[in-house]
View 1: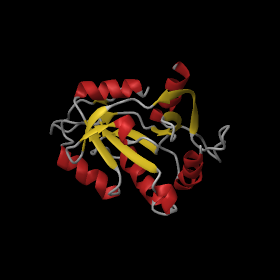
View 2: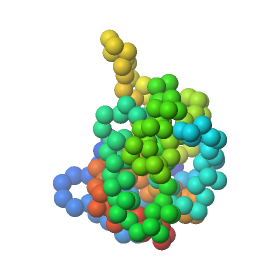
View 3: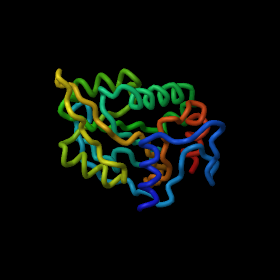
Length: 199
């Protein structure tokens, strides 16, 4: 568990240097977790107001899970924009087997309408989820990512939320095996997604 957590912390602060990143043991650009993460049975609400149990609702799919918030100035829109751009060019049989799930770490500001509009502006097939603060904290602990932390509000009441920058990839058997940091490029996603589907 410690090794897996260290990998995800690395993804939080950014990873990689100059040059071409090394491929993992399975030929992936993503960082394979030394300790795999079982897909937990989150009980959330999706952005349309429907109950969403994470493990059963995503069963049999490659699931890309990301914690963030809609006011995020950088990594959240970058990840979702890159994933949309790549999936949009993938064969339909790949697209059908991949789910992108975004969980807000800022439920106070990310109301259902805000979350729904923001996520679906990237891709109508992307899933936005929300829950109470306690459930969100438990979900992050179960997925072994650092807990999100609300920053100090400025004079206008605006604040940022520090959160994991890792996208966790669950293969179709429901096991989280790979973490993708904020420097993951579109061509690396395009290389890895078919391999994750075939795993």
